[in-house]
Length: 110
Image (cartoon, rainbow, N blue to C red; front, side, top):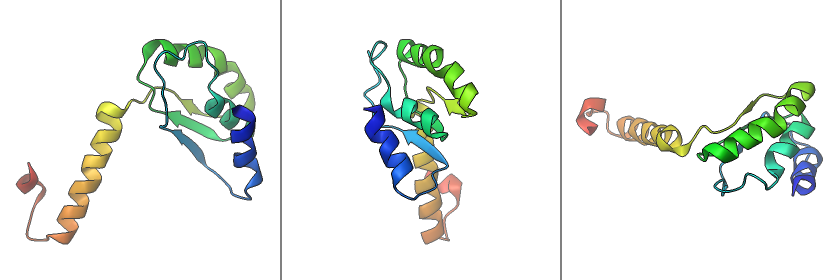
């Protein structure tokens, strides 16, 4: 729930720059509260998620936009995993392989 998440964000003597919500599930949660975005906004911490469900993303934007603006918090809803996060993972793997195998070039990995 939002209160538990908010407690973690505020009570750990940490200075969080952003909450990246990838846990889901996001599908079919139009009427369910998103405790993660709510806690991030209330804690003044920027938020991003990978929600790929149009209706849920639209509902979150509608519900939390005003509150985020009032609290000066940036929120990016619905970045998606495919191709967003999967592309970043592929890039990280490619960079790792190229670092270990200096005889290779990026085109060798395609």
